[in-house]
Image (cartoon, rainbow, N blue to C red; front, top):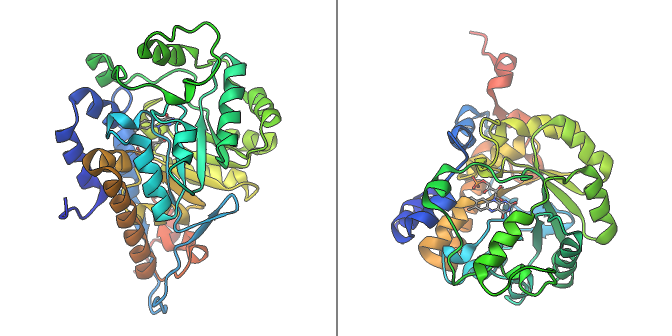
Length: 368
Ligand SMILES: Cc1cc2nc3c(=O)[nH]c(=O)nc-3n(C[C@H](O)[C@H](O)[C@H](O)COP(=O)(O)O)c2cc1C
């Protein structure tokens, strides 16, 4: 484990350690997995235009997200059911995020509750929300997160139905019976059969509300004071609607390529959304971030920060809290080095002119 030099190396270890059903659940994308590959490949088509002879003896990687100062613009995306990866699950993730000075987003479908995560100690945390048909349950969830000191709601808007992940279908994926979706345990769920845990998990999956729409975002604003980020925006049209409805921020995401296949890589869709938002709200992104260079490219395209999913899940599976800490440190150090080698001393010095993309190739064709 000491020999690990980049976050991608955790995946092979996780694959070896985990039962096939669980590894496949974490790793897979939807259908042909074209978007899954493209989420990575698209970064390789964006190149740097580094500036030289800038005094980079001091580099400041700190960023501010919704008013919270964090050590770097790299945060943890919500990923469900982390106790399948490691017995300490979301608790280990929370401790690692806090030690790294960054933000963790807890999934609605966590195997630890908001209270348990809060009890790990101080740290800025967001709560990811799936809206269920029973709005009374949703209100209880949001209230619980607010009470536990979570600082924002990341409302997932790309999952009216679950994407078709064929490995999960083949493996008949189900939450192992010793685990449960902890956030729902203490709630008043009406008629659900609580006699066994799989009853609760399948209740929650069946209850995801397919009718979710912009009016519900308005409703959500009436039941919580927390800022709301919409997670799963990929177009300028929806970025405009999100700003109009008054969200606090936008997360450009294709759910780690687990929902609609053949949507563009998020790094490709990002700039369209940034342009539409016109600086009215911050725009974040996730999807395929595996290197400090990826983070820099996202910031150069206008992101205020990025989130990672699988890299920390695989690090958690491989080495628990230590693994997640190391994954965050490696990404931090790579990002800092990228800044130095590009001539940027702080986040605000990273500009669009520091990169060149396929869609602006004409602009910089060298005249030989
Ligand atoms: C195993 C796994 C579970 C996930 N669970 C959730 C979830 O519960 N809620 C959610 O909004 N997104 C979920 N996502 C999507 C992530 O929040 C994020 O968008 C994605 O993982 C980013 O891409 P990356 O894995 O390439 O970094 C999940 C992703 C993975 C890989």
